[in-house]
Image (cartoon, rainbow, N blue to C red; front, side, top):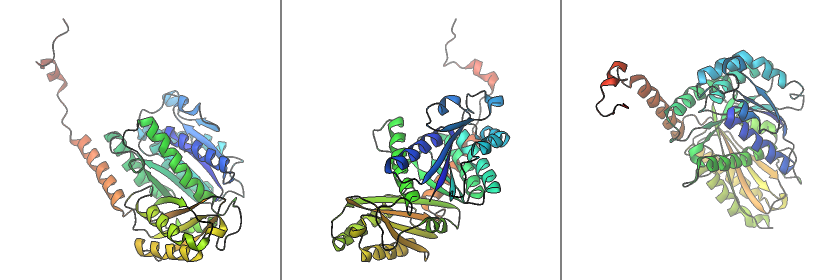
Length: 360
């Protein structure tokens, strides 16, 4: 599926760069172009594509400090500049637009819903949001921002492909190491999804194309993406078990949104050398996903790819009822309530605190 990427905010810009890099390294040609948008000038300087600095009259290039209401206001005021940067990039070839954003910060969580709404009014192609949920340890402000942003962006976009940071973070990693690893993992998954049906090597029996991705996401709401791979045999019939095991791991332990197995629709893509992909295995995997998700709208097909491995990529549409999403929204709600009900000390009383010594 040929697409144009718009990275909003710091996390969105970095993930967009990772996606573009993966697409170029693999030679898929699915990413037609990319731009980065932010309120913080320093976060744009390292991005390898055109950038747009918004909100200069409000924050002077210093960012919005996690204030996603200000992030939304700034995007609303400067969205014309962003749309102008897309001129010439959205062509007849373009099949979708992805707004990429971290939902916990200020610029991304506030700006992504505003931009998605504006893009849908102008372009007659699907506008998706690739949104990153903050981890549980990232603070109450990030939980509140993400909860508010997710509710809004799910309404203003054609679908939100959601990534939970906690699903990818490994224990012992630093914050920067964790985010770099997450970006690489997401880029691999989403990059393969976008490339399905594009620059493929060989011809499969039932090759997935972009229309099947779009149809899987057509119901809107929240989507998730699973991935797993294994060594492949050169003999197709010997890979039936590999197809089934990677499909199970992709759905049960390898999704961008853990515990999101109930879905309205699904697309099962088996990638590998055409001669090594077993037809029985693909059909059996599709039926298993149908049973596991409870959906009657499960599509399946091949992604011919020159590789010594078999991979299973599963796109789930309509997973907003999942336990993971419900748990996150409850966490965001509790953070909002805590902020609203927290008792603040009378400023006059702070001077009578016996636990603090006078300086003089």
